[in-house]
Amino acid sequence: MTGPQPFSLGAGAEAKRHAPATARNRDAILAILQDALPTSGLVLEIASGTGEHIVDFAGHFPALTWQPSDYDRLGLASIAAWSAEAGHPNLRQPVQLDASADDWPIDQADAILCINMVHISPWAATQGLMAGAGRIVPPGGLLYLYGPYLRDGVDTAPSNLAFDANLKAQNPDWGLRDLGAVADLAANHGLHLEQVIDMPANNLSLIFRRR
Image 1: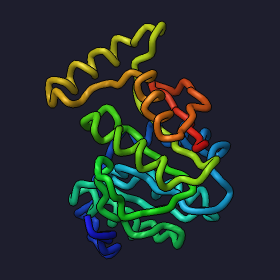
Image 2: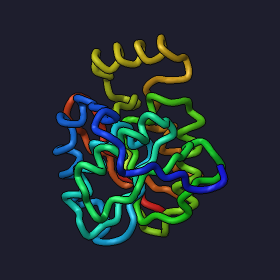
Image 3: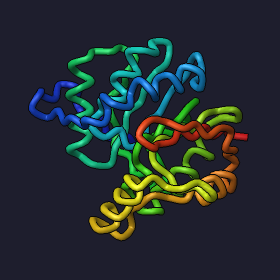
Image 4: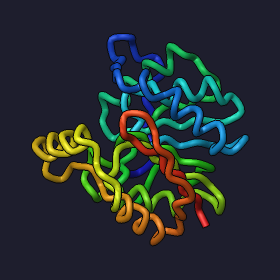
């Protein structure tokens, strides 16, 4: 990838996608971010999807600059459309970013968010996410992950087991990841798992800090 590939914020409303889960989880995630995010700086969201999360967060944290990204071009168009409608001055144009790539179009961020990507992508995307976060986040900087995980010694909810089976049926490279494996991978890139927070609907918030 040669550099940022911004998409016009003039995208029409027909490009907007909607993820029903966003309305269900954004307030719970927001409550975590209010304590975890820095007071100023740049927040990069990896795999912004429809764009609904980052548009909402940008409105709640006007002192932060928000950078959406996604690999999928239709996702980028949706992010652009939601962003144009919101009109937040602290929300940048989305850039195309492949989490698994060795080089990202963003070379510095004070915090990184990644919501519901790890289980709906190949393991290489999580490997790239940790490598990239270790590369561009400063010491003390945040990597925030949200989603379902498998945990040693903790019974997995039947709904999560069914979800895992469904994901693997769609793509054998997808599926719920073991929290210990994710934490070990993060540690290899200088990221310490500071906190694991139980969330509604059998999801977790993971707070990593750059050493």
